[in-house]
Structure formats: C-alpha cells, structure tokens
Length: 299
Image 1: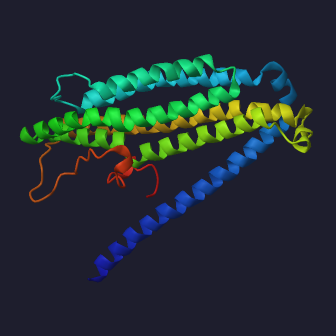
Image 2: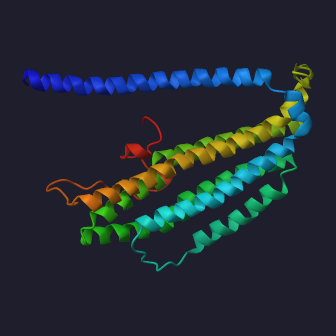
Image 3: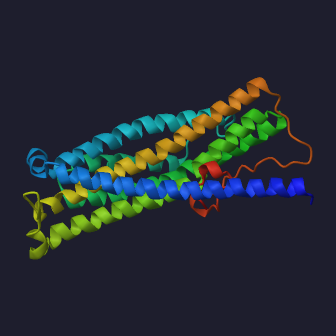
C-alpha cells in the first residue's frame, strides 16, 4: 500500500473515531443537562399547588388521552407505510383467524383501560395485559399475515426489475422487524411491569412509616408516592409514542429519498452484486438488523 492509500485509510479511521467520540460526549452532555434542568425545575415547582389541583387520576386520564390519540394516528401511519411498500396480496385482502382474534382481544383490553382508570392496581395490570396482547398481535398476527404479501411483492418487483419498489419494500420490512421494534417492546413491557409492582405494593402493603413521613415542599411522602404509578404511565406513553414516531419519520424519509433518486437517476442492479435481503423472520426470532437505520442502537 502506498503513502497516498495509507493516508486515505487513516483519514477514514479518523472520521469513524471522531463520530464515536462526539456521540459519546453528546450523550454525556445531554444526560448532565437533563438531570440539572430537572433538578432546577423541581426545586422551584409549586408541588403542593400541583397536588392540590390535580389528583393522581388526572395524570392517568392525560396518559389515556395521549395513548388513544397516538394509537389512532399511528395505526394510520403504519397503514400508509405498508400500502406504499406492498404491491401484491396472494390472499386477496382476506384476513385469517389470528388477525380476527387479535382484533377481538384488543377491544376488551382497550375497554378495560378506559373502565379501570380509577382503580390504580387493576388499571396497571390491564396495561401489562395490553402490552402482552400488543406484542403477540404484532409479532404473530400482523407479521404472519404480512409475510405472504411481502414475499409476493418481492417476487413481483424482481420479475419486473422494479428496484424502486424493491427498495421501498426492503425499508418497510426493516422498519417492521428491525431491532428497534424488539427493544421498544421489551422496554414497554418492563415499564408496565414496574408500574404493576409499585401499584401492588401501595395497594397491599402501603409505605413504611418512615418513608410516608418524608415530605417535599410541604407534600407528604405518602401523597407523592400515590402519584408515582400514574406519572410512570404518562412516561410509558411518551416513551412508546416518541420512540415509534422517530422511526416513522425515518421510514417516510427513506421513501421520499427513494422517490427522488428514482425520479432523477436510472436505478439498475450492478452485475454480481446481491440485493439487500428482505427478511420476513418473526420479530422475536430475528438477528441484528442489517440496516443500521432500523437497529435502534449501536448493536
């Protein structure tokens, strides 16, 4: 290797090192700013007035409103994503027993969340059931039904050499089954489980006397603890919806980029180059996503 090539390799390594170093520093600075800002705001916040104006049920109602609103808009976005990427359906739009069962399971779970919002422990337990049902319907009912559509769409795009359609399908499958989905479901399950544990402890055991006597800005520890599960529910909803919203922006951005490229350039397959694989493996059996855009972290 000559001097020029050595220099280029070193520059490439330097850029990679700079990227990792800056990413680490940015995460540390963001964490410090978040903790500092939160401390300053809590220090000056009128906690006693907040607890007097809003009971813990108010936070639960806020979380439910955000959850139902986000679910409606999110389901619409996911339908758009799949309708953009899919071009063929061997089952002619028909749904099977698993899909019907998934829909029937969602109805009582959603109803349970609405009816039980005033009963803290049972509401949190219903939320945990909701997460489990959501994981099952997504990984089994949704992906099993989609696999035949994806395979048929893939075969059609290859047969017609429509590489624009192939790339959109590839990105859509990576969005649907990428590692970020698995990590999000696991995080939401753990958050829901923590809420159930806290709500159960408060319901059946209460707080130790020493903890109950600890106050903050004129508010007793017992009152503050009663807000914890409801506040965590709002955190759960925000975590869930912000996380998935980020990846919806990614997939729509990918679609737009593919459209721009196809409009201005001729898209052909290079000789002896394998197309990126479209992997329909079930969500929880899949390995690391080959597309870094949908890994959801530094795997």
